[in-house]
Amino acid sequence: MSADTADATVDTVAGNHAGDGTGLTDPPKGSGRSSWVIFAITMTMLVGSTVAMFLPLVPEAIGIAAIVLMLCLIFLRLPVALAMIVPAFLGMYALRGELLVESMFRTLPYGQVTEWTLSVVPMFILMGLLLWRAGLTESLYSAGRKWLGWMPGGLAVGTNIAGAGLASVSGSSVGTAYALARIGIPEMLKAGYDKRLAIGAVIVAGLPGQLIPPSIMLVIYAGIAEVPIGPQLLAGIGPGILVAVLFTVMIVIFAKRWAPAVDLEQEAEQVTWGDRFGSLVKIWPVPLLVMVIVWGMFSGTFTATEAGAAAAVVSLLITFIWKWGNGPFRAIADASVATISSVGAIFFMLIGVEALSRMFTLTGISTGFAELVESMDLNRVSFLLMMMVVYIVLGTFMEPLPMMVLTIPILMPTLESLEISLLWYGAFAVLMGELAVVTPPVGILAFIIHQITKEPEVNQGQNIRLNDVFNACWWFMPMAILVTVILIFFPEISTWIPDMASSNQ
Image (cartoon, rainbow, N blue to C red; front, side, top):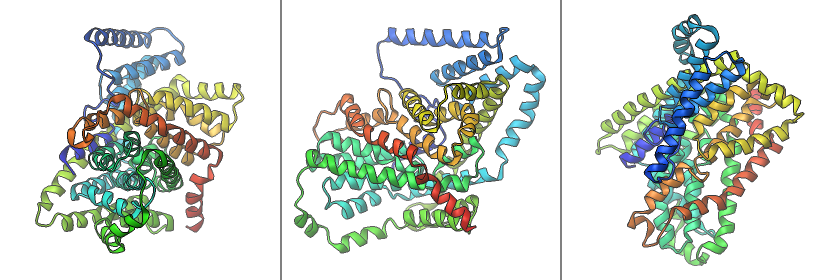
């Protein structure tokens, strides 16, 4: 893996925006005058919301002003953690005075990050970065191509499956798409694939990876919602498999129109069974680690932290083997430094989440929203369909972490009143958050892939515009919505594995 890919992975895991720490996707570049107008409007809203927090308003209005202030700070490229902490403490000061703020500064940072369950976070991040440094990207893609190349759209299907494996161990959809775009898109274009299928297969390749353990996003959600990390990770397996299967089906359907006809017998002659099994030798660490983590937690042999520690140790040994003679100590050192940076950013963000959550409790926004939903007489399904629309709208200008931070603390009382499983909602929220990074008009993956496709060795002489990337996103969006609707009507897809695990222990 290139250094740029590793950096993109770290930035995404840490909740930053491709290295700049905003959590908000870059908008298309326009004229200088438009930029200044947007900046002026943002600054006006920032100053206005800050002033409003110290006016004699009802607590709910102060809470809304804090939300506006947070969004303005994110838009102005302040790191997500600071964008939460600043309005949280200003709101507390406005509501209760300096004694509460002083008490929170003393107790909140230590109390929030010393939870034993959070010790799994550095283990999973270290595991993912070690595997990236060991260089499994091309091997996974090659194995997927050899095993699935006989299918209609086999290259695209192989890209989709390889992406699920890469994202599950890296914790980064952005890093996965970055790596696969350089490998998969030119291969598919050379084979005669329509550019919409080639681009779309790469864009959706990382979506199931954030649901299949180990998933940093699910761990972060568990920290926000204060649910057990082990069961939360298990709750992502069913939805992750569902996403991978249905997107594979959609790719096969699209391949009938957008992929070249494949002579199955000729393809079978080109790739022997020896080649297929030989390709598995190079990727055995990925299924092994996923199996160790899932089986260990499911059987009760490991807690989530112990499973993460075991996976990190195995990854360390794999890195030594894979990089032996080619600088294993340098790879391990780079992964360790990046892990420290990422863990610090995540823990800082969790402090901000808790501060914001406590401020929302003081303002009464959380209970007020629950009462509003009650007054609307929404049942579980209608509420979740409404939230699906809300997340899709938020996804047009926000990344997954800010979306979760903004919504989860407010929604907790509502989820409890509607008897919605917090474990299930974790899988739902992470899936909707992942859709945020592909949703036009400013989904970050669209811009990253468009930038990569400008390179001649990637576009293979074809003119790939940003609009082409957006079109590829929209073609795959109906399946993403269908998956979400299936999860809403059949929550057992997510909950049956953690329920079975708890009954076995």
